[in-house]
Image 1 (cartoon, rainbow, N blue to C red):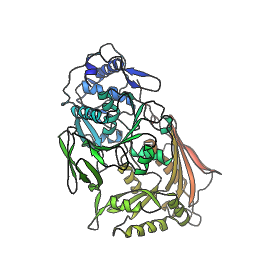
Image 2 (cartoon, one colour):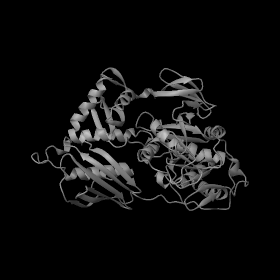
Image 3 (cartoon, one colour):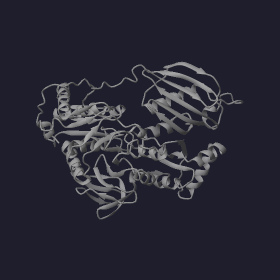
Image 4 (tube, one colour):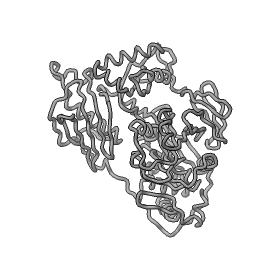
Amino acid sequence: MLKKFYTSAFDNEILLLTDDSCYSYKTVKSLIISAIEIIQNKKQNIVISEDNNLNFIIKFMACIFAHKNIYLVSDRKKIKDIEVDFDLFDECNFYEIKKTDFPQIDTRKIIINFLTSGSTAKAKIISKSLYNLIKEAEDLGTELKLKDLTAASTTTMCHLFGMTFHLMYPLVNSLKIYTPSILYADKLKVENLILVSTPAFLNTIEKYKTDFPIAPKYIITAGSKLNDTVFEYLENKTNIIEIYGSTETGVIAHKEHFNERLNLFKNVEIKVNEDNIEVQSPYIYEGKTVINDKAETDGRSLIIKNRTDRIFKIQDKRISAEEIENNLKEHEFINECYITQNAQKLACICVLSKSGQNFLIENGMLKLTKYLKNHIKNYSEIFPQKWKFIDIIPRTQTGKINKELINHIFNLNLSFPVILNRNEIENKIEYEILFYKSCNFFNGHFPEFKILPGIVQLYFAKEFANIHFNLELGQGQWKKIKFSNIILPDSIVKLNIEKKEKYVEYKFFDDSKIYSSGMFMGENVFKELQCI
């Protein structure tokens, strides 16, 4: 990989593609040199938190050749978890210069630190050397043999999965990199593509039966297990490679058909214990580590059973969250669910099937939760005491369960309404919401004629805007608020939220009327990162 930066032999090859431009190695090298000049006088520890993949690549490579310790952060709110003295690499004013001489580096001494939530909401830091990343990409190239293609991604290069398959694999194996982030499958119009994606993104393709304008040659997925139904659906459109691994281990195994076992990569050795897996490979900074997965193995193949760090102790009993989830998903009312521990109680967030939604609308929340608790009693003495119902299990950009957001939802003082459905395009999202009559915010507000308080409408408009657009809109930023009609208990309404340059517009409505509307002001909230 590095030889392409040390010689001019590859200068005319195309490395990066955007929708309207292409960047040769020569151009990219020149931009990296200009970034090195920016970074060289900064602190030894550099944080990169960058959504623009083109800017990210320039910053990342500049830090490598400037011999910096690199910290990659996909969510800027997690920067507070970094405990070393650092500088944030925020500049993006890169330019072409003639000088393209790169300093020699020792790949084992360049350290890249990934922030990952692990089994808690607090970020922990996983370190890799540049040698680990290059060796992994070299071995993947030998085994997967994906040549003459272009890599694109729905996830971020700040996460190891995106780093490995969207950046390192193409750099090491001479693939092109398409830098715009893929947000919607129906916008995918690149030939000879490898799409690097998460199960969360791929689930929506199967759910809405989305067609690719140009089907990718391969889809590489990781982060969690890809549902067999989704795997089989996508197999009829393209080639699927599912990767099993973690930030700690790098890649461990893969499979290319939904009904296959996972097969270990050749330079990976594992030892399956009762409650964990010991992994040894050249992709691990310390050479070996332990992950909290329960598995069965047969030679070089394995089946992952569950995560042992999702065993909770409730009322002096050991409870497997995944066991209860699997039993719940057998019920006709449940499409998907996730169980966590909240305030020493089991809490369950669920995606209802259409029949489950109909039962809720016809019979109410209390009867639905009682029905589901009785179902779980057939399998477990302990069952969830807290329930929330939503259309999609919250996940991060990298496809991991968003534990922090789920805990936030359960910790709200207000009841959380049921999200029945959503539709999103560009900077706009529309929710279909049920404000069921047992929501606590109906209590005490005109007891003889309960209505949804206006302040609650404002609260959830702001809450959903913050969640979807990853904003921090606070109090006192409301403007042009108008209440036109009342919302009664058990009403199903739509909430439309649209992000503008310096404000967010919202509207509660249904097919016959508008209930309320307004905007949240957010000066500089939507400040765009400066591009090259």
